[in-house]
Length: 458
Image 1 (cartoon, one colour):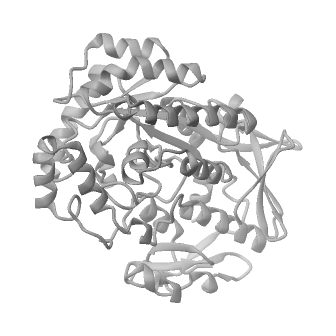
Image 2 (cartoon, rainbow, N blue to C red):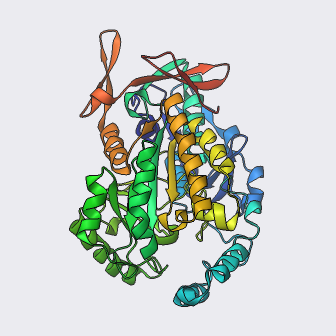
């Protein structure tokens, strides 16, 4: 069981007492339970489970953790719970009117006539669907850290029981950066495609590069010159669905056919990344893709057509694909669902993610930034990001760079050289040793070679 902590922190496998799981937790019902004060888990637990989130409070697995001096026994398998959360296997129908997602016939009808509906009508239907989103109990709005909390609380508990006050691990980001920022732009229409050069100028003026996700079929032509212009200016080109009709994951056999077509476009354009249209997803089907990384999974999806969320602000592996979760609200949701033309929500999310050293992933659409009012808001965001990245030493990267880093970090390991810890593995020159320490019952992160300290939430 300790492997789940090794994978997340890249720490020494035998640095702590081993975790074990009671055999009884490997069978039984799957449901919701708690671990600690606020963390909602989904899986099997010897402590019992509830079939709804509302009832999980009566089953708290924390009280059933046992220590016999040689191992720490948990009433659940933490790796199973983490995987269930990341892959959104906890998803249940939520309250509200299901006109876009839960009813397949209505979903198909909507996308069949979507192009015929006036924009104002589409937005009214969407706001009707999202009515009551504030009442969704889980994942937690506006950013959910459940997976990250589980790792931190488990590490804190094991360190406490093992009598370890300071533990080395490989820091999350290169050169000791406090967090990471990626900007992405999904192009939905011909007008949006034609606005791309101006959007690149705008990003460049604030010192940022971004990834552009392009729909390869039906929506608009994708000439080679357009692709070359994006890349020649240092921006990234990725694939956005097949035709953005909302049907990518509706049927398994049809999905496999579409995935093969999407893969062919990835090879044709040399694209390494992917994002599904409207953030529809089925992570258990990702093995059909030939991409290096995906960007289709929101951290918390209260304002996306498909509810759910992966409950983490860190990249993670889905098979051999690196998932770069979307951790902030999309511009479309902000402007047209919430009717908010400020950056206050974004600033709130940015602050929360920075406080947990996570990945800040932002989606905006050239299609919606053509409008001056929306563009002014986006410029305010860029100005805030420029100041934030400098002041907080945040790594600003392209998604492909984050993918390469996360893969390299996953192969690195710590070794002891006399009285110092050393990182070995390709890319180690950019990696930094950090320490997890216990201070007053809290887990604190500290980089080995700088004085900056990062407090975990525990």
